[in-house]
Length: 254
Image (cartoon, rainbow, N blue to C red; front, side, top):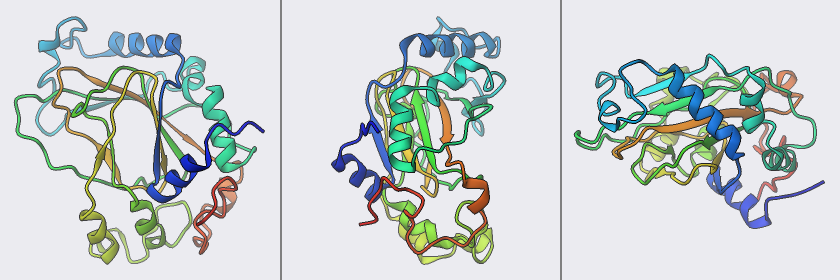
């Protein structure tokens, strides 16, 4: 089986919970994705008028998640069907993967250049999956609202749950925020990823993450998908194994 990741890359993913890969996505599918998003955007957003992008939504809402076309074959092909990402997912998770009916969608973060920087905030996703992928379909500069991760947080959050993949905190959601693990993650400096169209970010399902504050002059456009092993539904409600990499045959627990 093709193994596109080096031992060093696998170790980095294991230790940090994320990994950036460059120049992965198909240019034609990315262009189709950008066109689809702009065609569906609210009328006050004008593709060739950057002034219309700033402050496009109220202060409390600077992201827009467009999901209407998430089940179209070309959208699924962009991430799930990408040969390199398929090989990466099978290297990490094994050969049997869930074939999706849809992806998450196109997630956009609008520019907010006239505001003071916002403090970075994280969360842990509530749905069950294994390997998250964020694919940039347009360039994302530094401070451009890139996918933000708290490096190593997956190891702190993993044992805060009763179940291996579903969202069942040991002592309830509110109490989860008052744990040593949570306070430890609060002390981690967030990593704001950025890059060129075609770059992707891989991340572990228990990773603390969030959308960065976009202080650039452009809309951040990314497509998200979650790779899952075929046995996910059978094991998702089991207690988390002591070895958090049990279901990742391509990762040495270290």
